Length: 315
Image (cartoon, rainbow, N blue to C red; front, side, top):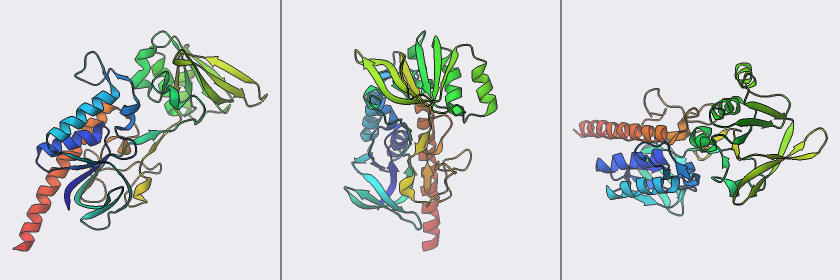
């Protein structure tokens, strides 16, 4: 039986692994289907403290992983298909490994950005296609960018990108937006933002190994149009990676794990959540790493307390 298992190897899970390994708790880290999380798909990261010249996303993840291994964390290649959180120790069914039992569990499986699933999309991630305006907006200073989406996130990211880009064009598949009125009003009052509504994205066009434009279809006339742009930001939402939990833990209506405010505690004692799997607001590498630290400290206190409790029972 393990003392603590960590699910996920993004900045949250790796930070938790570093702290727990330094505390001699020998954490076992299950890498999952996307080792490194969204950072592994990111090119240059310029807003992570300590790297004044920036660092490539995969390199940052590799550094964190090696740091955790240096202190004694164990990494296992597999993904959790089923869990039993109804009793302690918790049981994890890990594909490629088998069952693992653990006294404490940290869930840091992240959230996956919703994609359009159109040709040219995945190939151009990091080459002009992005799912994070806060992460990548700086790279599009004085350039034209497109945002795909019609919700609050799309309006918020459009306003944010207008600080850098020369023009921001919003593409949405309907005439009506899902965004709240106040967010729509803010976007419509921004002179840098233009609108291309009732259009369905068909494919992303690249040239010279970078994004050149996005092909869209007019839903009224079926006419196709190439919208030339230097960058395409997808703002159609995220899906927390919590399906494998199958209702065993408390989540909000969209699947994000709910934690006690100011902690990483879930509704199940001994189970903690950190990173984007419990954060639908900030979704930054640095905030994920911060909650990973919190989860590790919460686990340390939990294991110390449970050990004292078990000892008192044996007396």
